[in-house]
Length: 295
Image 1: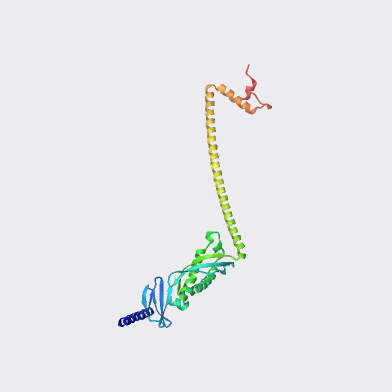
Image 2: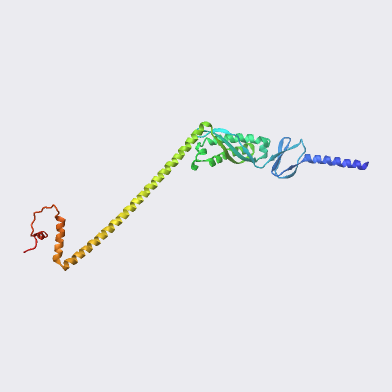
């Protein structure tokens, strides 16, 4: 009977100790942080994983917070660009609990954070998009697109407020989806057509410029070839004339009388034609050849 009573007493004591221990200790898991509240006022943050001691409820209460990165997808928000065009934008953000105390005081629990962040990101997007034209989001020309700059501006606009007001650290903000109201779709297509026409005009101008350069180079090459051919022809004619003069000189040296006779005939053939009538003296060369041989 004593043994049973001692066994029951031991089990009861162990149960009481276990209950007291569970009430006076908490485990912070990896990827979590625990905020300890004493009568509703925060007293410390247990950020290291492991077993931590606290006073029992209702003196101290623990609030568990996930300190890993969270992904938030915002809803579709309609806003105006700088050129007064409506766009419907959807973003996503990577965020985490940066200051547990401020987070709990401003928001309370993890499930309330998306609503607070969504409103903050919507206001940031409205402010940032007001400094960009629609072409910065929809242009087919890579140099006109500014999505990276827009995302950087969104992060710069939202992160300080999230940290100071909510204890939330935002690591990245990015554009997830862009929609256009029906009245703006035709404008975007017209803008794309205009950009394509600009590309076509530029390519045409570059082609015409290249064609003009090729024609100029070709004309210069033709002129160079013609000049070379003319020079070569002149050289050949000069050499031929020199050779002819040499032959004439040799002929004159061998038979001067025959040379004078042939030269006179050549001169007459150039001066007198079939229908030529001349009244000239025949006692001068080369007309003396028309008189016939002397008796």
